Image (cartoon, rainbow over all chains, first blue to last red; front, side, top):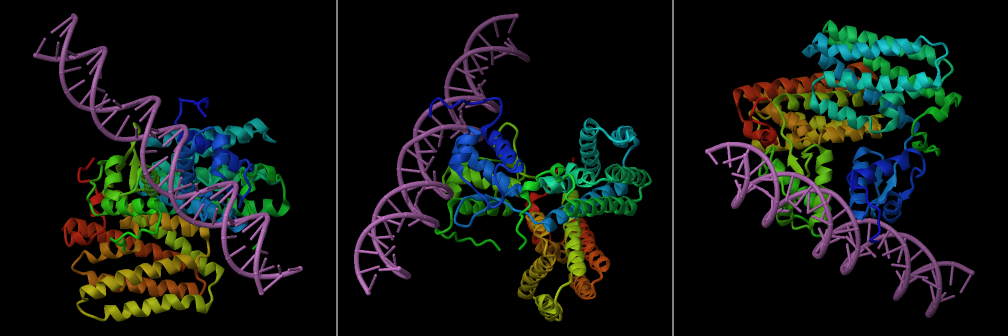
Length: 250
Length: 250
DNA sequence: TGAATACGTTATGTATACAATAGCGGGCGA
DNA sequence: TCGCCCGCTATTGTATACATAACGTATTCA
């Protein structure tokens, strides 16, 4: 239709990708559901070509799965998939921390991490933590992890970590959500903060093995707490992209 | 290995993707070079839509890089990028081995790996190894790594390892090539084979940490030998996708 | 003479038309 | 009544036309 309203400030492909990702993560599209291109065209406002490009990107991102006979469906994840993804990310971040420690990092480069650390300390001083403060925590934590990843100075590794974070439950905010979906949330966040402190110290002292170990422990903590949270069914609404978990046990 | 003859029954998108990847890996397209869609349409025989889909997929694969002003260019890699990619893959395979060991693997599932192991032993008995035998080795080694990865039973991890292998120098055959591009090739392959033996043993005995450690050592061996080979400039023609290495040091 | 601007060309981004295929439903025959 | 087959429809795969933005070149003015 000629009267299609076009937003020229952003490419149609990116617009479609963002809109579709939002639909998937919000649960508007259920896992296993086939995505209709035509329907996507209507909901995103882009035409078929950019929609198709977005679908391909989302497939590569891991949110969609190609159907052999054609088209795409929303990918479904098991609980095991999720905990594996978290551990996978922790392993990659461990490698990043090791690289940073072994290759050396200047004091100036560590400064932003320390600022993050201090800011989080400030937030955690509140007992109990407010909703706003928790929201800030999520942002700061994600920034901490991103900056740590950057310190590895390894583009292939950074790229891979970014890819691993595409799955929302494997992202740093996913870590936090998993940890916070428990009554002992604040206690857990304090332990996580201790991990952050140790990894900075290890990098400063160029202890690669220690830096790596603590990041892996960090992830294992998140995995344990995710499992607990899923068992207890506590605050599950906090968990990002819970909609992606397939309910049927196979 | 990529087959030169393209089946007309496969989709145009896949055809274009294979053709373009082949052009990149063969060095017909130089690193940093912009890929012209029109030119790609001519060389691949597909029309612009499937070519664009292929370009997006190759970008996600890591072989191409999006140009901010539009279009794609062939990605260029530094020597450091390559060794990092190998170590990255080793780390992921280490995690896979750990998962396999911790989660338990039946004797029947280990059988194919042991067959691979025995077949490689047979090949290595030749001194010096023939070109044909070496070619078989590359195939068998890739199969060994693929089967080991599968034993983790972790779809997210398997997926990530596959992604990490998209870069040709980080694939199992890339491992082998890096190791073999040295005069001491046969000696090195025997050590690598010993790693294979240990990882199977560790998985059988459910020793996760040992299984993980040996796979990481396996990768570090490849990294060391790659560096040596690049220093010595020996048999560099064997290294897959050497064309992707950028010559200029930044 | 150099720099800046304007215009033209070319390539990419987007939209849509066309083709092919798979899935489904109805009808017909056993 | 059940099952198979044929045809229709809906959706994806492909091709191409159109729009737009970027880059290069040439010309003009300072």
